[in-house]
Amino acid sequence: MSVPILECVDVHAAYGRIEVLRGVDLKVPRGAVVALLGPNGGGKSTLLKVISGQMEKTSGHVHMAGVNVHGASADDLARLGLTTIPEGRSVFPNLTVEENLLLMSYAGVAPDKVFDTAYSYFPRLHERRYQLAGTMSGGEQQMLAMARALTSDPALLLLDELSMGLAPLIVDELYETVAKIAESGVSILCVEQFARTALRVSDYAAVMTGGRVVATGEPNEINEIMADVILGGAA
Image 1: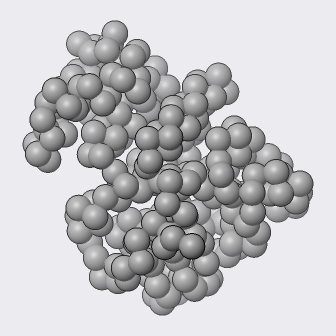
Image 2 (image 1 turned 90 degrees about the vertical axis):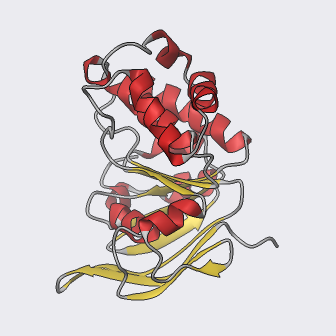
């Protein structure tokens, strides 16, 4: 078996004295989409912060491509190919779409490549390229956030609550793009409270509650075991 692009082993983390992650074990195979599901407060977003170097774990191990990344900063991990799209739309509202995208060229990506990547995945952004980002719909802003992340050519993409505040049709459209991104070879870990759409494009899924991963498997297996008592009705 190939080495997973991401592996968490017995990861613990806390806010002060309150332990939030209580021994998380999770793998993301290379080239796979893994949905991390569960209710609010289950520890999903905290786990992403630990993985992406935004928060220190109290114990356990995180490996990227088989390498222990203990102590690595968010910048170090970005250079290794890890890119995060956080909860909420992380765009600059007073800049146009193209200006938002051009910011990525300061990281060393040629502007033409930035635009080609963004507009090939999201043709609607080309139509809106001279529009201020803050005047676009929530779905279009999420597209822009995703496009900016993809211009960095990530090996592993972390998506945190992609569906937050968006209409179901827009969420379906965004997850269709997630599937296309995965087809290009990018590994993806997507955190979702609402499971159905994420499961449709996932290769594997894990359910997290109470700071632990309580079930893993293929989407149809997870679909069968997801009871309201686990997901709080979010399925």
